[in-house]
Image 1 (cartoon, rainbow, N blue to C red):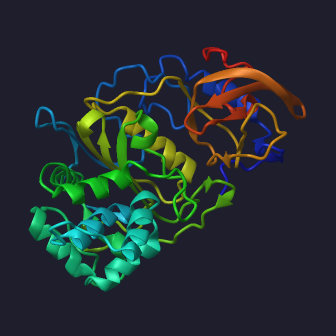
Image 2 (image 1 turned 90 degrees about the horizontal axis):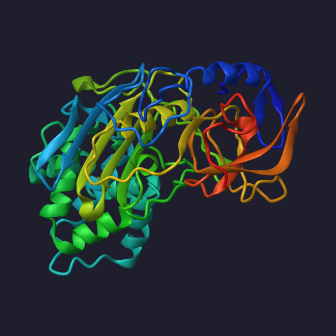
Amino acid sequence: MRLFRSTLATAEGALPVRRRFLATAAALLLVGGVAGSAAADTPTRRSPQAAPASVQVPSGVTAGVAVFDRQTGTFTEQLNASAPFRSASVVKVLLALDFLWDRGPDYTIPAADRALLEPMLRSSKDQAASHYWSENGGSAIIDRMVGRLGLKDTAPPPAAYPGYWGYTALSARDTVTIYRYLLDSAPGPVRDFIMGNLRQSTRCASDGFDQHFGIAGAFEKPWAVKQGWSGSYEKGTCGTATAAATAAPSRVAAADVDLTRPALHSTGTVGAGDRSIVAVYTLHPVGTSYGKAYTDIGRLTRSLNVPGAARPAGWWYGTWSDHVNVRPDPSTSNPAITQLPAGVEVLIGCQKRGQKVSVPPYTNDWWAYLPQYGGWISNIYVSSPDNKIPDVKEC
């Protein structure tokens, strides 16, 4: 799947022929940009310093949201909080909890299980989830955890999909309940193992998926995250490999759980002492690219009132083109660190002059530093009308 019909191949990506026209049009939308605003579908520059007014759900997105402040014991955000979504990989937290239940008194984890559980929680390894699903009773795991934690909206996968652990239904409010149990009631070794691994979430998932969207992109550390994704959209890249798309069934399950639209979920805790629990579940229109879904869940998450959260400094800008290389320095001399998902919105920390990139008739020697990737992209791929981005400081 590609965002642009007409492109030119370059060393840094596939540049749209009409980039300058489109970028100028996009620049007209930049005035008054606010973090999380969804006024336009085209990725635009956004200031992370602006205070969000309310949950802002981008057009076409269905969302279930809950934010719980553990310091005050109150919800600061709730939107469709009881609506069930297919959990995708978020259910892996329940699989880990079920495995660890009643393993006391010291909750020793055999080395063979640690080798599966750690990548399942940090890098969302599907093979590990399938192992525990098969070994520990499949849907019975979900039934046990519903009873143990008092979950209200959680249900096993539909009977027609017995091995599809990712089709377990979860809601935002039940996700808050799960994290509250982990943080406030679980035995210390269980809490430390699961939350410790979620704090070490890797950017690249085991399947090559770039999983640092939502919470991981919207807020500075400390955070702990368990992400979820499912659907037949282009997965984007992490490192230099492209993750294969996962086809979703063409039918909808019982209990109104949508198995068709692409899903992207971000759950976890934010702030010192895990002050806020955040659960963001989203469904996107069929055919949505990964870059668009990544951008939309990022805007939504940045709009939330999350007590204790620190927002990263910089400027949010949209990017153009497909598979733009992120370089270790402002030049094309060294191999790429990774590639951006097509059309994704990125945080720019600063900019400086570097090697000239030429895509006739355009040239640009300015480069943007992306602190969340630890690398640089040519400004030629940033949705700004000028070679030098007007409001971004120099490095």
